[in-house]
Image (cartoon, rainbow, N blue to C red; front, side, top):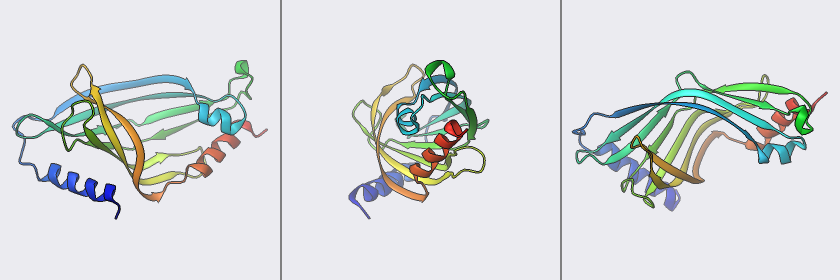
Length: 186
């Protein structure tokens, strides 16, 4: 096990062993509706690729007995739909496809939620698909992260770094290739 994996196991054990919180968890509903050009897929596919992400979910924040945030659970009960398109007006092919992901995310805050405090992000389930009949990324990934701040609702904002643990079918290359095929094949 790597040093990072051992640190994660220790952090998870401490957070989960924490006595019951005096404060009930806080639930914050959120809605995503964002459109952006994917530099990664545009470069990979050789045509402009625009991504439109839509979804609703709930963030649940958990506290220790002192009222400090120790973990967060983000859920997309209706799923998050990502629509990939290559717009003709940008010089693309006019092709489009959509996929829906229901992958929950857990954040662990072993040292608090002040800016600069360490965090971990755990993503599990179906994380990425690439359209009908194409490969999926399914499994569990753990990322090192750093707390960047806290939003107006009191939810930590996290800057996610590199994965430190990966298990499952998690290869980005076949998914990217399949997405490019869906957007470029005649």
